[in-house]
Image (cartoon, rainbow, N blue to C red; front, side, top):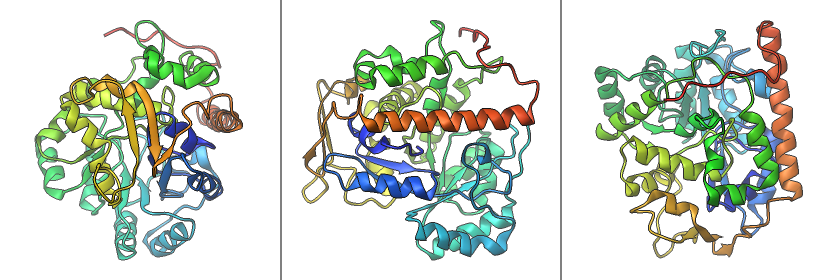
Length: 375
């Protein structure tokens, strides 16, 4: 996920007790660190600023920020991120092949240098790559985690290479929740237990997002599901992630949707739960959490039902604790934290739209959309 003001508090109200941030600017990281000390708010780990080329992804959302022009700057880049509180390094390898416009991307020599510098600092490297070819490129550079299951089909030979490498994959299947279904609504609002905790203000945000311009045809997310199923069968360690706050996603709430997506892709309920707990804790060296055992952090969610038999039972939240401190499940909705988070999201969205309009003058006017095809 990516931080918003107050996201640690929001996530905790859905029983998500640790967030793994994959690109945020230092001022926001420092601000959210004050929440980490508040009893009952979620903990987090961060990459701080991700490594990308000048003008590369995600410049539209986060600029200005430092970038890399070649391998020689890798060691300094890693050192600066550590000084900002980074606990892992994020690398962006995105050439724009899945978007309307090509964007500058890091070259592989630079990525190899970043991996080397990060590993020397005992940090793992997470790589953003959205295609199977890009995934193979960064796997060969030695990265430890892929930030997305590829959007195109992974070929058998590529699947074998990914599995042999030992790289872990953050699934982010919840990206599909940014696209309306046949009812023209975004899926997250279709779950009463989640919708009730989301609150009126975020519900309005999600409803507005359902009316935004969408590509025609919409992406085929069934390909991602097949990839996830094949990765699981090949023995690749899957980590549950949401990429919130992308359209249709909400911190904390979308983890419950991600679990649903994983089960729909073919994982058992227990395997999906492990992807959201023990596997992710192990991948990010969080050895004090992710399991229920004597001596571990008392980070717990109590839900009605049996999520090992019916994954949607995770949504029946009754209590949550962070380090043994009870979470105020009603403490985020209608709070100043909620207002700050939504304001920050609106500002980022406006920045992205301004950048898009400059790159793509023919981009459809605000408020226009198409009705996605039903499947």
